[in-house]
Image (cartoon, rainbow, N blue to C red; front, side, top):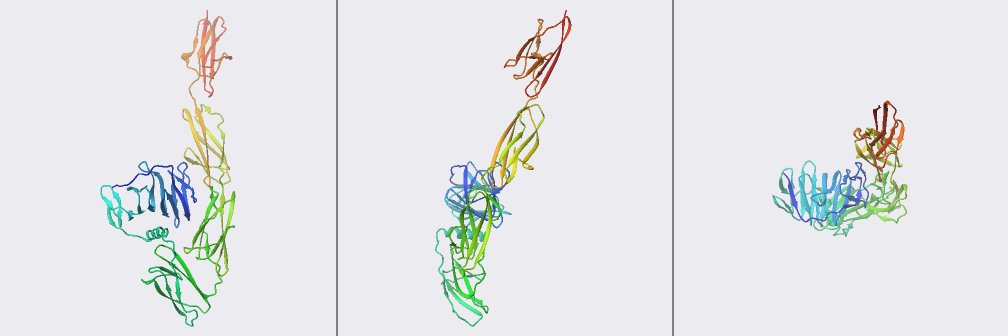
Length: 500
């Protein structure tokens, strides 16, 4: 059963999306080559590309004002759907906050969505969730807010939100409410009891994170939290997150803190980029001062996550991240990134001649690039040894075209084209040869061919015609005509002429 969702049609464009931010690992396969390369922030996504988001990763796209988030593992394809630009969800899940028209497709449902929040899951079952707005389903009527369509079962169900749906709604709400919740702590500064209780006053229904545990405040915004103290001085911190996802942090002195701050750089070291700017993500304890390279110090926000765009120099870059906590303890992390925007060089060593009568050729190509990823000839990946590609290709009659692509680890692509013409037709047809009684030999051959009569070269006109007068003696005379064309094809004709 196939359902079609109908809405306004956007104008098609070649560039469909821009990768605004990437948390974790994501890869892109451009339509012209069968090789995945690293997806980087601010990269333009064009039609025909396949995007793969690895587990525990997230990519945020901006498409004509629409915000689309993909949590890994997920695979999508950017393609033309019904003469409109769009995304096909191959596997995983997608969330979209659609303000402008956009086409979205799975195996069983195709939709143009506007003014709607939609979450789609394509795993064991294909489920479309309408969180906000209404979608018209052809043949079924409207799929309204608060409903979900299970295409595997072919029926409409009550909307069920999971943790990722709630996270996306919180991220949407953050754009409207950016004020962190206030925190007031009522506590005793000094106590002789190991069992310790303090009261937190903040927004009603806020989530409190304290020592790895979650607490929810009551309708008055209050919660009493109990903990157990050590013999030494303790330093406690807590965070409060409101319904919009805004977070705030508060702390009070209980323990001497001598541990360095925990910071991580969730970016795989050793990646390549062809863009001179890249965003360096940092995660850690909220409030930690972070300095990336020579940039200014910035405090990690309540979410414990920030990004800093840095300039990359050609070649390998070692980016150092320093985190300093309120006690002055510091920790350092580094990540290595290579900036390479130089396309690979391709030199065709053979064939030198573009005209031949052979059944096959050996195509030899020399490719130079320090970070070569692979070479593709006519859509197939071919092995490279020592920068040299040597491969035998069969030839068909006529012009044979070989398209050669070379791509490096940063996604730089270079290409060239080789054309070889195979010609196996004889240079002269026997019916074109005439010998009259006046000892004159006339004929027509392929233009550019060489003609020899009894070993003597014969002039040939630009259109392939020739005429030659032979000297004969009485009796039987053997006349040998030999023709060789530019491809190496040869015709030999022997005639006996008898003179009385």
